[in-house]
Length: 266
Ligand code: IPD
Ligand code: CA
Image 1 (cartoon, rainbow, N blue to C red):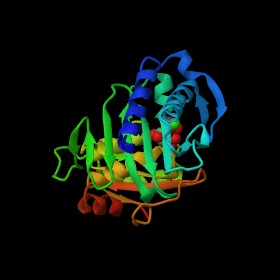
Image 2 (cartoon, rainbow, N blue to C red; image 1 turned 180 degrees about the vertical axis):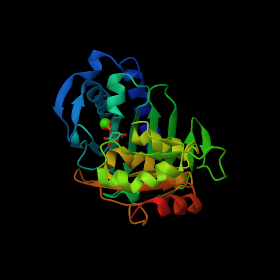
Image 3 (cartoon, rainbow, N blue to C red; image 1 turned 30 degrees about the vertical axis):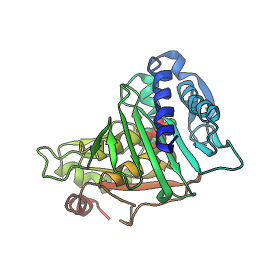
Image 4 (cartoon, rainbow, N blue to C red; image 1 turned 120 degrees about the horizontal axis):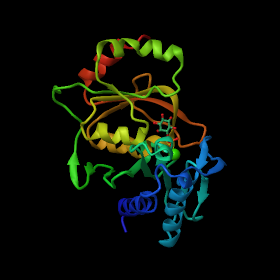
């Protein structure tokens, strides 16, 4: 079985196991602090267990880097890393806000740039985004590309959850100039929407986002033709450690990148 098929299958199984849970008391059960530093909710644990059980069942020789379970070696002859955020947008999932997803990626080395497969599934409806390196990005079977025409409405995605007052001040010219700014609460799914051409740019300059939240989106954006840069406008890369936190700008073309960057107070 190809790695991309394994991740797609694992992702489908998450959807099957959590689709009735969003917004329920059962989803919210508190399992203490997970490896990523946030409280693990029952829905996170159920989703992660689904993936771990499946990878064990098919004997996939890998090391799992899960947001809740941490580093789990499923073999001492590992082919690479499965980077798992089984529920991205946990707060939405627990409250029942219909915007959350799973994010699964495979990397051959300890680097974002060595990711070869990524799958993001919208867990509210089972819609799936995926990419394999050099093979393009897909949404429910159709190839997708970032938006590269002048849009009717320019939609600017900005993650400002928990942003400092200083960052809000730097970003304020964007809010003054643009009427259609958005943040939905699940970074991976927002990266997928961007890759599909529904947002023109998506930025997260908080320096807070974990590797698990962006690993699959990283490849899906690149394979859809998006520019993906760090806060210094260099190509985004990082190691896969649990301490790593990143900032990034995903832009559909150089023109919108230049325009938005010129608005951010340095
Ligand atoms: C969170 C979401 C959210 C972002 C947070 C992440 P989680 O992921 O991606 O949009 O603002 O920084 O932690 O915790 O729900 O997996
Ligand atoms: Ca999560």
